Image 1 (cartoon, helix red, strand yellow):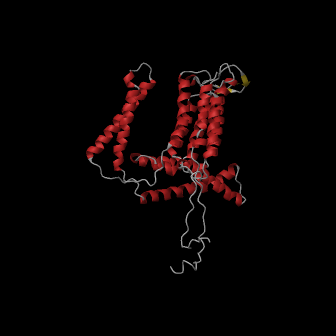
Image 2: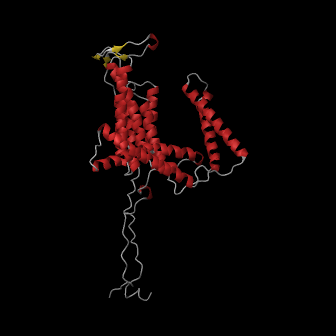
Image 3: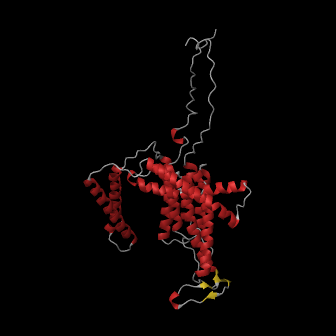
Length: 400
């Protein structure tokens, strides 16, 4: 004889075994946007401290791997390809300027061009002239460094959500944060508008390439940007942008004095760190005191803000790991550059194949950790239809 449970109007949820439960820290979620920006800025700082093309290409490869592994499917995340093309244009333009206006370096002749004579007061500047291998190497190294710097910023734009970044801005810097977020979203939204207009032109059988295609797409793109700015201004006004809570005069003055003193201390401390022969107390200690004073002033100034945060993004061990993977390359490459390690600045005169410094290269490879350590992205919610109506059971639901 078997026992049959009575039919009720509710169903029980099966409990998964402990081995199948997912740990809370590994659940899909958005990484804090500040961690992505710290990682990207750290890689950018590392790129500015060297002209070694092998090290710069290694930084570029690390950034490309992380972006392709962690880029979400969102309109603001599709601008990385545009930054890659912009970096290639920067290299070409820098080498063209070196050919046309740069000083002649070295003696390895590549091509002879006619030169334009200039007056004596323009000494050091030339137009045209012989093209040497050393001059082209100089233009390529400088252009590659600037291109990698721009691509690192583009990686941060593609990985960090602008809306979530605005939620993480301190209350005292909310207005400044709004302006910065709007500026950062300009490039991704512009790329999205251009793709949308070109797709519409392609469906209508119009030209999408060449000067004619660019001219026909410029007006719809500008019109969309203007409509978006008007809509944004109306939304900001309706949400009370710029309104502050009343604060006493004494608190405003103390906040201003703390902020001014902190900025002055940071400036003097930074000069003491950079300048040689400066007193010990002028360097790092004064900069630390200035940072503390500035942070305290921002904390006090946050009392004027009347905004609240809805579900702020958490800062967990994944954020610390992603931030550290960008800070470590910046510190190691910067220290190697300050110590004038071999290979950080390759020889141009005479030209030689650059050597790859081992320790900075390993530090740069640490920057690939976000491709593994960052939490998985949340899946987009699927649109589900309404559940079918349940037929009442004759054994339990009719009586109810």
